[in-house]
Image (cartoon, rainbow, N blue to C red; front, side):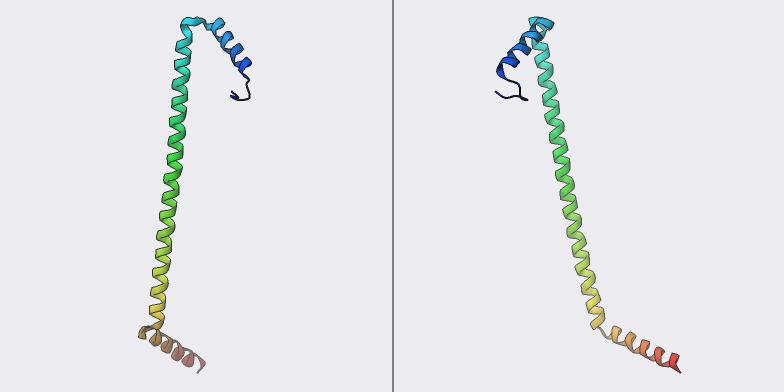
Length: 102
């Protein structure tokens, strides 16, 4: 068993020291408290992981919407450039340039 680079003999020594310091009556309470602490830590880690996943999903959704908007605006620009209105505007600009030269 290699828990945090602690050998089996060291774990036994630590357990003996805990028993001497706190006694056998308080040992179950201490272990129970450690277990609760580890569970809380796992829950917090899971919550953080879920939050990151949700943020990445939101980021992907934003990228998709941005791409769709860019596609739509480029289509609108193309249609405007091909339309009669664009040709009329171009003709008006040419006429204004001719008038300015006079």
